[in-house]
Length: 330
Ligand SMILES: [Zn+2]
Image (spheres, helix red, strand yellow):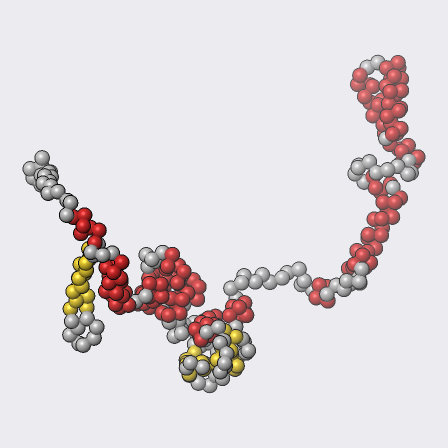
């Protein structure tokens, strides 16, 4: 092509001299170019690559490199190590039939849940509630039920509901220790008899723990929404009553019980009167008919500042109007 740039003007000049017609010039030029390409094939041997298609096949260095690459590919197909891996061994399964079709794990398979929630021997927990929570989560992901054998201040033991299954988790709190430790964990040998819709260990207290954040964020969270959430998370359906009780438990965890609130009320009012001189309060309640705590009827309460300010209030007569409604509007 370098040769072409020098020769072209000469050819064009010659064509102008001989023929003069533009179409004849183009034909002539095309013929000349064809000849030049043929000449190039013969003469040009060490030219640099110009980026044209298939030109590499005419350059010895590139041809040699292609040949080498072909040889390497053949070696790899035969299962041998390629020279550019510098000692890294290709795992055997890579060359096995079917490699390249890995099974996609969607993260919801029981195997994954098993590993995620598994209670293992020797695992430690800060409180007994944490042990209970962990055992429940594990059982729910295994879709197996358990019953509590022993629950005391230092021991917690559960076993599978199936009598012939040796599954057992035993946790204890050491004498001078603050944490709980699982000392015995035995595997299930029982089989699932079917997909149950409910789980006996899915208690309202467990659901309250699960739902705490959501309900405290949104106090209007309805029991129906709790049922949906539990269905999505654990694949079990709970009753409306259980969802409602779970919501009440969350309220108790966050705000205390109603009984405790009523019990605190007179004490709180006493303290307000003490800090605000001139204040007054009065609490009326019904005595309990069955001998338990009395029932609050009503409370009157007035701040001292309001009592003092009331003396300076002037009598004021207010007249207000309203519209007639019904048949005679006006
Ligand atoms: Zn079992």
